[in-house]
Image (cartoon, rainbow, N blue to C red):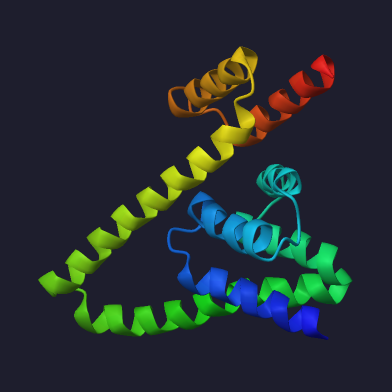
Length: 173
């Protein structure tokens, strides 16, 4: 029973204190799940990130579901997923009610500008964390560069980039 409480508490905390969603949340998941609780290794975390990118839905929910399942089976996956969802549900309900009342106030607009900067910083931290493990050789850097250009310049769907990287990984063994 303790593991279920810990899963819920950890993912509730991640959901509550991680702003920006998506990749911005990866740094906090890594901190809580890999470094603090040692529920999975960094290598397993990287695998979960890759799988979470290939499956539909938000990366935080997918990661919570996978990690929860590894630690507590089906019930662990449900509890972890609910843990990461509840803070957003509560906060977004409160923000929506507040936003409706204060959306034209200059100080309120300034808060949202600062939150965007915070999100950018968290995304940069997640990139650096993943890049350190991913850039093992020149070929890895070339795959990254090609993927970046294909996504940014040519707006190629990330799904096709993931499939391409998987095929290259299989071909090179």
